[in-house]
Image (cartoon, rainbow over all chains, first blue to last red; front, side, top):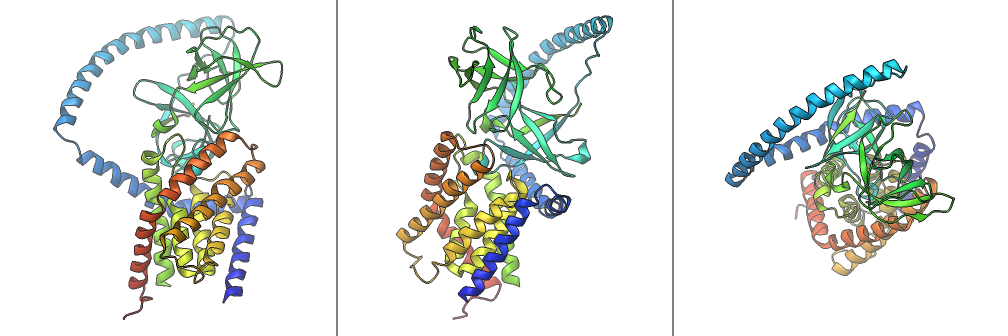
Length: 267
Length: 168
């Protein structure tokens, strides 16, 4: 009986090791897609059931809060309408000037909203799974942003897409590198993850004059992240790394625990 | 057959519950793993062969939805399930200290040994990973007793529904 169990263990372990070694081949990808196709609906139903239950749980204090929030937001919308008009005017002017000096026009960004459907506790700062995929035009290497109560910020990029799901590598993953610039000084550098809540700003030149609280946005260098997306803030003093360059700790714009609904920039 | 089907359904259910509530239960990346505790209960109850199968199925689900390296969680969970199953009939699993001790061992293997191997294979080992792993280990071990009771009750129900339970 015990040897029977050992044989089962050996077979299953061998199968797992085979899957690890053949991870990127077509057959394993097909198996992944099949398992997603089978398992995905149950998870989606559960998420919908929970969100519906939450909706039913609204009470009078919620209604009062929503009323007040609604009034505030209406005022904010009026403000934003003015800013939008200004933005469109400036964008047009910018595009006109870019065409005069021969640069390509800035195109408007298209975003696909998605819901986080899975997050592994043991890979908390590495990856999340969202409920949109190839059917919604999402492909690997598309930037993903999230909106929290007051701000919008970059959280990562898509690394794998199935028909109805995508895997997102968070900026806190140690394999993630994002080209950024400091809004105040314009200095370009790289933000990398360390598998924890904070980020690290690297390749800062000596004497860059950074201040705590300086905003960091994507620089637009490279093909994945468009420029101007908020990434975070400088959270501490700079220190020399292992090379000539300096490093600084950074606080992400969107806290890791606030990633529930996201937007994938598809264009 | 019904028993295997119900076991599979249980794994899926526990995974869904874990996914839905882990955001609310986590603190700075420190979160418990319900599937690991379920694996502990079911393998201690039914032995090495069942533990390996239960572990493989749970690991595969984790691999499909979350893991960076497809097949890695399946391998780790299979090994943990089989090893834990070997303790079946050797220890009195109804004793709370046994439950905590086995849970501590399993969590250590999962959060430290497996994590180190994975980190060596990908991005290198960092201290923050171990800080988070230690936190998750403590969190999961603390939840051992209540979750053990729940999963044990689920196992009893599965036995009754599949006709495996002793009618007396």
